[in-house]
Image 1: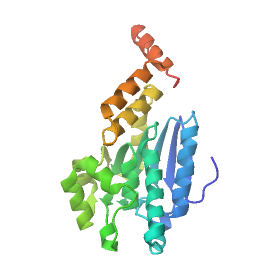
Image 2 (image 1 turned 60 degrees about the horizontal axis):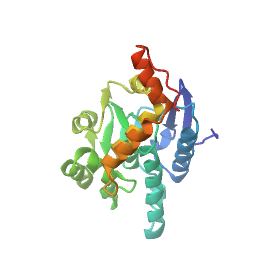
Image 3 (image 1 turned 90 degrees about the horizontal axis):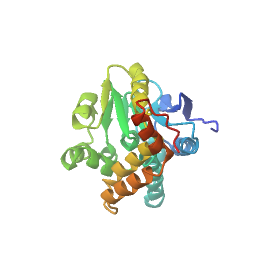
Image 4 (image 1 turned 90 degrees about the vertical axis):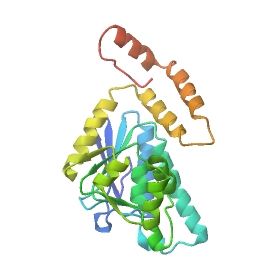
Length: 261
């Protein structure tokens, strides 16, 4: 991995942690940070030794409190489209990642930060977390895929209310809405909780995990047939060494040793 200025990147036991590290700016996303996130994500994708990714923010005040307001103030109709499309591309890369991605949300997850969390496959939050898409208070709207992902996740009525009022919801409300998979009491419990979930996930066949992610994502894409995607993935899974290993291990009554081949 290259050296980074705005994110921290480390890992152990096949799980990498990407930490947005701009605590003085409440980890707000500027263009430089988005670029580093893309580079890190691509590095994880290319590294067979990395099996999963956790994304979090430094400190206890914020996961990511939104986009950098200074850069937002410089946008116009032309460069604003590029700004939106760039963020969408990066978050789509996360959503379509064939390795599990967990968001560990500490504090504020607002605007682009909430959109980043929505792009992850699983979300864990501490009870001090707050969620919102307050863009309308600035005269704009979510531009990194939030209008789509939140609607798919919690439905039209609740997503419209959140986006039209621009108000925040607390962690318990987010859990009740189905935004959050798990709640923990304090931020220091987030990473251990994420690691525990990934231990369960990573016992399974890596290629099959990626195919599950691909098939589930197809459910929200109207331009493709999700059932056909599932059938294609099922057929491809039968060609893998991991499938053969899984069957042998079951018959021999032993834990499987998957290699991702």
